[in-house]
Amino acid sequence: MAKVVSIEVGYSFIRICEMDYKAKTPRVYRFAMVPTPLNVIEDGYLKKSAGLRAAIKEALYRNKIKTKRVIFTVASSKIINREVMLPPVKPNMMESMIKANLGDYFPIDLSHHEISHVVLETFREGDNAGKSRVLLVAAEKTLIASYEALAASCGLVLVDLDYVGNSIYQAVKKEASKTATMILKIEESQTIITVVKDNNMMLQRSVNYGIDEAIHEVAASSAFDVIEDKDAWELIRKQNCIKVALDSDTEIIEPDLQQDDDMEIAQARINVTRTLAPLINSVSRVVDFYNSRNPEHIQQAYIMGMGGDMGNLSRLLTNELGIPTKVFRKLEGIVWHPSVGDGDLFNYVACIGASMASVSFINGEKQQKQQKEANNNSLAVLLGVFFVVASGALAANGYTVWQEAREEQKRLQGLESTYIPAEQIYQKYMSMKTLYESVLTGHLMTNRPNDNILNFIRELEEKLPTDVSVMEFSSNDVSAILRVQVSDKDTAAGIIRNLREFASLQYVAVESLQEVEEEIERGEDEDGEDAEFRRFVEFTVSCAYYPNSFLPEQELTPQDTEQSGTETDAGQTEGQVE
Image 1 (cartoon, rainbow, N blue to C red):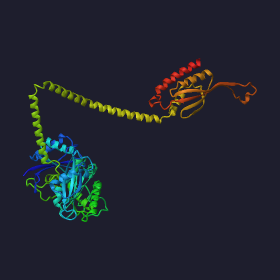
Image 2: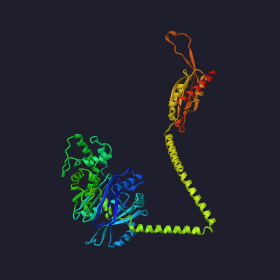
Image 3: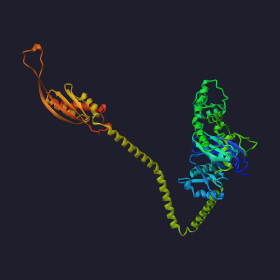
Image 4: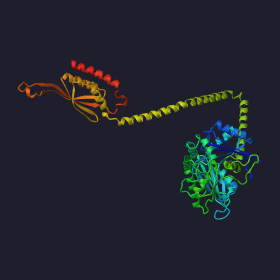
């Protein structure tokens, strides 16, 4: 009987089974589970990785797995599935009917997808007699291509690609007779919930919660002597790091067999348990959804995947859901080779189901057709080469021109690829330039002319002579008005000329200028003497600040102030001399 290697590539582990292919009672000959290299898979899509290839090849070699035919089972949110009801039709006509009505089933463009289907149930009686419940599955061709490339790099021949949801169903459908049974495949960040009854899949949902947060919490807690996530996972496998209930209000059906003498350990287990609340709530909603639409409620549940290795998780789910939950450890119709034992079955259910009946994204007929087309293409190429050689003497000139054009095309293509990075840098530069200009414009819009008032006052303090008196000072948004008293007109002229050289002002206008004679007040003992008068010049100037176009980087620096003050002092002295 033909053998096949069935592989599931997960975020943390790669699971491998060597077993019979599409057998009624398949036998598992060998199995292995190895860590997945970091950053090689993203939502089911495989990245080109020498580490992933080496990990699979080493696992096959160490476990003496020599079979070259391989099946991959994939979990990805990009695999689209939908359940439909088809009218009575012959099995060999079902695929044609599905393709003819794809637009009704999936209202999106499926030109880049491979479509397959699985018959979930065929009704024998009642109003739906003869009709079939069918699960339609669509996978992107790029997803399939990533697994084809991995198989080729490992020296394997890809015979099929399956969807994890179907793999689980095919493996466990015989486990539930008349009782509705829930199967939970709990992994790092995803849980697939499948409800089966009477050998039929009644419901399947995927939720984006798993046990990764619990692993992180164990690694982060000081109560557990671990630091890395991988060490935390090994600790979780060996001892119970969670409680059997989320809080004290939960009705306890399965008691906790572990007693915590250390309060720090007890609190740490409570914290780890709470990280599983989103997962439990999501599962509970799916249970309520199913029970509300079916008279016979879910009576039992099983855990598989990484969740099967977490101690107390089955007890926690039993208490929180009110449904007896156990770890999946037995599978009807599966024979384990005596030399390998039965292993941890809950880790390999998806691998086993994929080899039993996959959704057939890749089938034998398609491979044969592709091989035949490849052979025909090779023959056509050989005939073309022969024809070119035979007619070379007559078409040498034309062939030479064609060859030159082809070389020129390659040269231009190489030149284009050389300039692509420069184009990307230029586009990034232009986008950053546009952003800078937008930010600068926004900044300038917030400027007001009187933003320069501090610079103006600083210049007044530094550049006006000490014998000048500023009698009044007022300012608004655009200008300031000063009333100044000086000793004579020459000094007034020098002050005005000095103001016009201020870096903080745009222009200075003289509002008024007059000579003033003021009597000096005398004391009581000086009565009878002649009166004395003080003569001075008083003038008023209007000083306009720079407008909004004055850039922030143009603000006065201490050096600018010193230079301007020196020049102003020189001008003032010159004015006084005149």
